[in-house]
Image 1 (cartoon, helix red, strand yellow):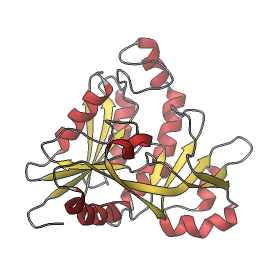
Image 2 (cartoon, one colour):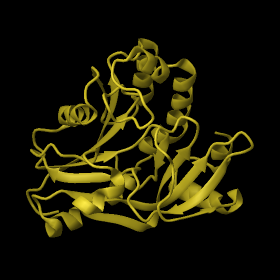
Image 3 (cartoon, one colour):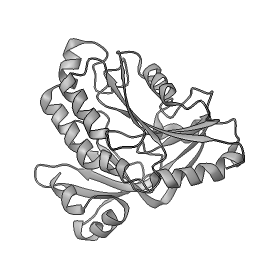
Image 4 (cartoon, helix red, strand yellow):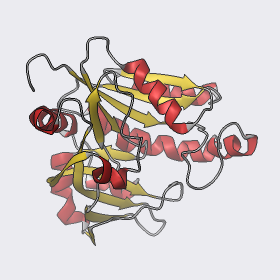
Length: 271
């Protein structure tokens, strides 16, 4: 990174936030029926289970822990669940719960990012992560290195998108979980980031992540195993790979999972 550039890394996780828009499968905002589905205890228990087993451990295990992590929730989230989330993220350096009323999706995201931004940052790298996915333990360190190398080339005043093409899809199935090795053709959402000058409010949620390279200078690493994406009954989007995807035997995957993630293949099999 050039002298004088102070790049702040901020992660964003929408934790069952009842936005106006942003959901592909219907429902939005303060509609009581929508909030009832979003905050249904059985659904939230499933979300917390995946968060506790996948997303949170992967954040706690980062080899570079110099980042802030924003957990965006609705002000209407019942205290029981809000307190549980707050207690869980307490060990995570830089973690912060932001509770907002229901508002248009991108407006809420922009406001939440702004609340985490340091006054001393010249640039911000904002990345996204869902509560049911995981990042490899070197994600932040690799992102910082890649952004530092590419930003001066791409342009200090232009958005730069960085991410990872390679990882695993984890299908949660009643007849036994299945693992698939994926190498995406288009950028996936897991850990995808956008770097901009700090005064620019545009962020990685501005466009559909699949189309990032259509609008921004984009670098995605096709060599490193960078993510685990879960496929299950509560997915809002249609989970599909845009490149190659092949089933992988658990015995073959076990050493790769242990190398890149803070959990075991056995845990993934029983999640």
